[in-house]
Amino acid sequence: MEPRKIQFTVDELSHWAGMSDYVLIPPDRSYKLALQYEGEPPNGDSYHLVTVGSRQLPGYAWGSIFSMSACSSFVAFSWMERKFERLTAIVDVRRSLYFALPVYIYHPRIEWPFVQNGATSGPESYTFVGSEVWRAF
Image (cartoon, rainbow, N blue to C red; front, side):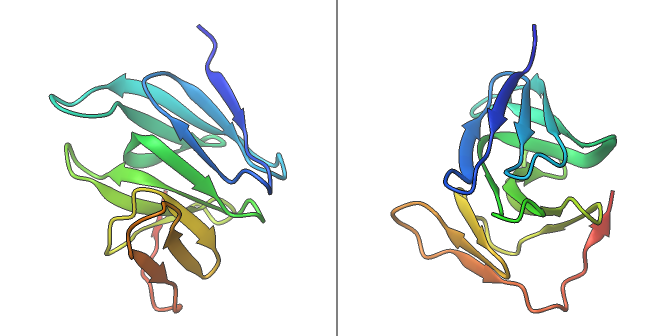
């Protein structure tokens, strides 16, 4: 079965993806982010392997909201380094780096250097200040 394709645009920077294989395409169409369905925890969403171009990100993405920056350089989503924690990861696709936020944001909205809660409720947010320790993948 072919993966479902989701095209992000500057007008639609967030989409839900889960329970299947997906290919996420950023607004500038410069790369593809592949989500390969791996399974489901005892209670909850699906989880997926994440590949950006030809590089696999460690851990798993949860089937939930995926958000991109308007410039296409950053992607945010629910992530787990080990089963079954839930964190929010920000991926810098241009530099093959990722960072796990110290706060969990289910529906992240990226307006660099800010990551805010895109849902109608919830005060969670994070501001990048330049001292973050990013990890390569």
